[in-house]
Length: 371
Image 1 (cartoon, rainbow, N blue to C red):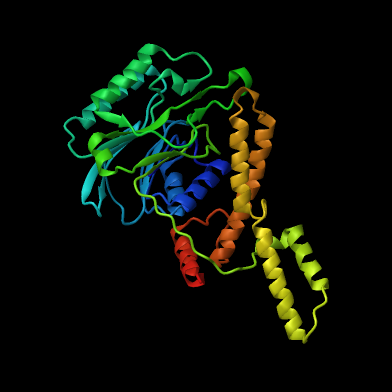
Image 2: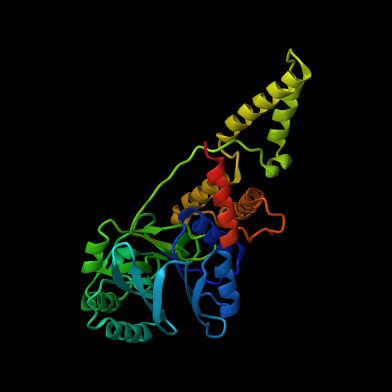
């Protein structure tokens, strides 16, 4: 399950980040808050990502908005939707166990947030099945979960911890960067906090003993996406070499082809052609393994550079980050060209590569191309 305060579902980097996470992590369930768009628009975006089932809460003017989306075959029943949470029942068919999930986006104003805590406690009252509360709580559990700005009031921290204890919840922890929100300022104005988290009941922790929360990259928002994983499966396949159309504009690739074709090969015309094509293939494979040779590797490198720059906190270079984010957008576009070519469907427009139909086509081709 992926949860993200996306701060508006429409910005290019926001959309690219969701698509990349969707492609690389394939979450079964998606919860977004602060969508800031109509249900019809949000539903369309979710369908493009391959989520066939969608439940939305309309935004209030230009703020708010929630969406819960899940894939075909995932057993989910939405019980209640309000302005600040969606409560649903999620059945694990393999384990034949049902759990309750409340995905939240709580208010930034403490008084209203405390009222919302009360509403959630009423919802959880008497619940015996495993359950979790996940989302943007707009609150912290301890002073070390905030860096910069004014110190959080002790009473506010106590209220949050009292809610957690009353609900019988445990913080699942995280892997990745400590802070999930940043005000995008620099120098002495920088503020970072861990506002997003996953709280679980003890029996859910027993059910999913290996469960983990991952803090992902925050490109496109001031919040980091949270990824809840109960099972991790890694697969690697050796694939056939294929020349990619996007390489045609690459000067390095062009030079590799030119240099190879200038070489003198003895033998018949067909043998010379075969040998040069083989040499080009081997040299392109070597080039692929070098840093910066393809867009996916560039995306990872750029994201790492952005993270490193942000980690400098007060010494971070705002201009450098903006330039890196522009390069990241271009790398995402190049990666979309790759997936368009992989699907071999000429009608597919850039940006629509994550539809259910596309994935079924790409996966089918991958299956036939394995050796």
